[in-house]
Length: 116
Image (cartoon, rainbow, N blue to C red; front, side, top):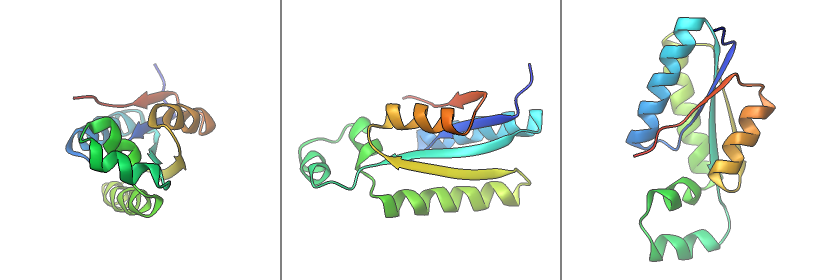
């Protein structure tokens, strides 16, 4: 098996950081590019969801674009210090849809996500 691009979904949570670690290991092993992906929701609907729910699914979409950019930048910097070729992508919308679209857009050979 040859991997040239590994994508990983992250929202900065402990579970997502585990996925980033697994994806980083794969990127090292295959000398592949690592692409960090995330979804965000900047609409007022999120504020109402935050108030009425505490599920991890809502956490994925409740980050604003600014929060997502900060999480991705911090993670990218850390991975680059480890010598991993890394970039980031994010978009607004449903996390599952966004991650698949972004992974396809960067021609990822593998999309890594971790669930609880």
